[in-house]
Length: 335
Length: 144
Ligand code: SF4
Image 1 (tube, rainbow over the protein chains, first blue to last red):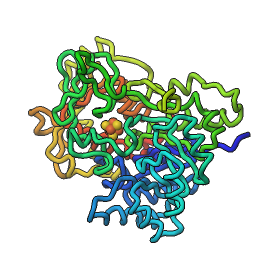
Image 2 (cartoon, rainbow over the protein chains, first blue to last red):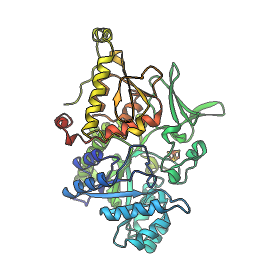
Image 3 (cartoon, chains in turn orange, red):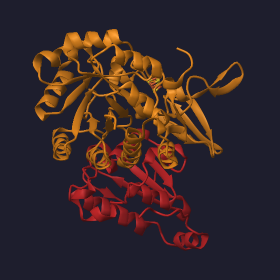
């Protein structure tokens, strides 16, 4: 049997953390209740008490907890971010997931024994960048942006001793991770600066008699017919009029799903497979973790004879944005 | 046991519509306050204070409206347009409460409607998600 990659699942709350662990996650990742992480939503995330309890729950079951501190500190105001790193170290998390170079340097100097993961927001798409992060800050794992083909993932892995983590399931963000300005354009706030794309207070859904309008800061970004599936209210997944046609221009509402590619990812030697969705509820975490746990175990046992069970596919499609799934860049013919 | 697929049949709806909506709303408010008092529901009331909520159970033809102040939920001051309006069929509300489905899934498939203050909706959703039923007698209903 092959050595399996770790299954890394999202936790936006204590019940979600428990759902991940009870359903077979090897590790969960979480964030604090502020803008030091890229899911800074009202009422989501952990404070000291719930984080300690979550870590205890995971430890007792021999699983790991990672803390995402993956937004960029604002110039002259990095105290909150440094405090988050200190807090993570004090809580005894198994690793912190960082994107900002200054914070990587701070964590490396201040907490030499704290394990560092390079966040997807760090946009390291080639092995040179990853190896540099290793030699500068002792980064032990890098999360690859969702823009690489499977061959490119193999190429990175072949040329670095840093562990490589890839995304396995979840909502897609189409721009080179961490560099998208669409949300800033419409609202003045973006994932890198404020930890959230399309902040909820700018979002309005309105019944228009025939269906539903989605508006972001008053800009109409989509109009759903009565029975059409919907997605998150992000500009990239809106429908716009271009040369007389109204359709998706940048991306369709859909979720990445690598089930069909698990044997190849295992062969490539990825160290971990990550599930997106700290903003989602415990029900999602339970359903997705369960399906991927079974699929991973199955892929480890059957290798190339692996076949995707309809039940997993169904479970994952149901919770997907627009209820569609895609292999995303892994399977892209062009580079 | 998962909630089976059902919509309330029309005779049930007619029967329900004849009842005033206040008792169910009162029951809801009372339960929320109990959960809040026992700290099962860790509501930051300052985020909810002064807001009005409407929960529309579509297949029952029933809309429960209530509001919040600094300390608790109540059924007063609910005449104006609600700040947050949630609408779904009874079966889907049950699935949400029993954590069989997550709200985003129901929203994507258009089985849950969210109108009004979206951020308030998120606060409410995250509040309900953060309830650790393990610590309550309701635990056994939440396992499946
Ligand atoms: S607009 Fe789309 S691509 Fe840009 S950050 Fe938001 S989700 Fe990502």
